[in-house]
Length: 441
Ligand code: PHE
Image (cartoon, rainbow, N blue to C red; front, side, top):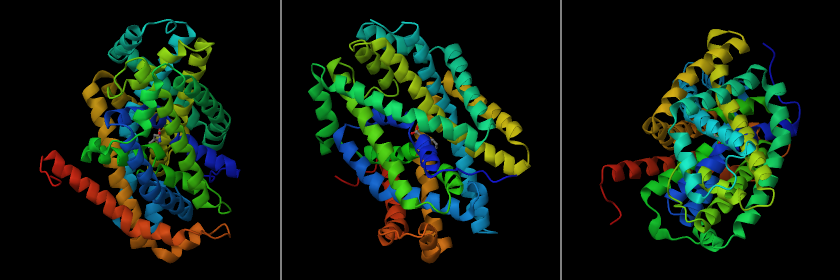
């Protein structure tokens, strides 16, 4: 099997950013932030991105590139005869779980592209916009069909292979999405009553910060960066030795954060201006945005373009999820990419139908993957660094491109002490708070 790699520096970063930027930024980030009180959550989120998620991302890139193999093979080769490869199994499980609900939300997005293109979202009142989402999400046939369309599309791209499939789509379309988000943001902050929404996002009220909010901020930072399950380890194996891993990781994280932040700046002013509850959960994006498109010049065009590009953003992320499963099936059974893609898609479809039919399963998959599976996986990935690879090997890998990594000592300290301790502590505090054991008052 020929080794697949990205032929340009931009290709690898664009594909990793394509995995990171997706519904996590535009759909999930605003709804989780809205449920957890706003600005204080944002601050914690930024802190977690810098001190916890970044070291995990750098570690994943380095482990993948060092091994030159996708996640499962990477841990097997670097720690032969040990159980670390189980990280790969938990990653595959996680990819399944995320793919199942992710394709449902992507399906809604695709359906919204269709609704805007056919003019069915134009000139709806706020109440009608809310009712449209209610009908969409509670119609099982509709959810299943659009989920399957999205999954089929993902499978089609993955079956064609890394270079042809992923690289060419993500490089061109993501900048266009960014531009459009900026345009919608400008309209959103100039709405009457927008300032309350801006304040919600930017002036923190720490009394609203519960242990649950801290837990969810951590989970969201992992979900958004696609870390904790081996996706970025697999991508790391595609990155050339000439490339600087730490600066690639910083670029990916900055792009990812910036887009999530702008999504907040687009959604909350809009929510407050139209009297929409910011804490209402997974429907937030779908009940806010159509209202603002209706108040923009060329609103219908903007709406079609926006939902279409969101589909593309979702597609690049779901490609990276499916990729984890496909490489697993391929390596495990030694079968062709096309066949393993078909098998993986069929399995995901079964889970996807379950999520389409039951909001309880949907919410459970959503919360469990982001808040439990990803931080759990990340914990073992960072432990792998000091326990198996050690400082010298990590330094060599991170400096393989010939330049230095100025913050290496800080990175290593965070990875060895701060990240494992923080993740464990946040888990424990949360379990205690679930059990209703108060430790702070
Ligand atoms: N990071 C993606 C998003 O923000 C979701 C994702 C998570 C993709 C984990 C791959 C792995 O939409």
